[in-house]
Image 1 (cartoon, rainbow, N blue to C red):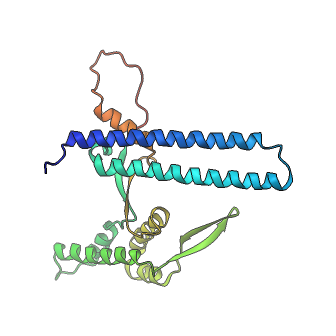
Image 2: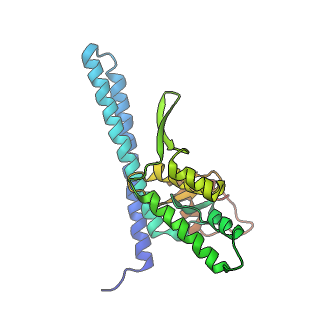
Image 3: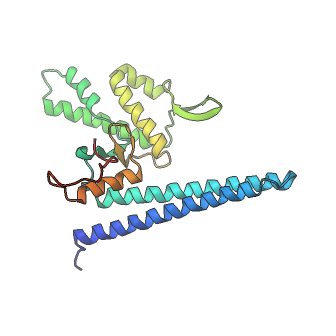
Length: 242
């Protein structure tokens, strides 16, 4: 069977993305309607009012969850189908959140390198150790987290006093410890159930996940022919370039 062409994949992705955006707009419209209903029903009294407000909150929660799911699906489609549209020149790159940075491992093994070890052997040892810790993070039986309350809000953070992490810090130093801790924080925030690294489109300068509209702006800049000097311009693209 013939494989679909690159242009076909892109057209299909663009159609799916457009459809996802329409669904997002529809979900937002529904949320506004629900809020208006809440305002109109504000004169209800007693138990009925309480039950009504609870139903509104539940409806908004469901709508918000669906909105996030659809938004995430559209972003994932962009990452898997059109990765070439993003890069340093646009200020948005694909980043694996939850993946341990191997650089501190290489640095510490290089400093401890002996005459008997070649550079290749040093890198191999660093890679092996980094891989072991990545596998450890994937293990749901290991949960180096603790719950804290700040401003009345409870959240889960990495427990620096976890026995495994304390041992790592003592044996390998603060830089390796921080690399593993950062990966744990990212995993806990973005994929706590799966415990494996996930690809996200990342706004580099602002160190955050890119919004869907920023991704689409990048695609527009990539596909729109650049104007020649002397051409009139109606405005500047603000969502993508550095």
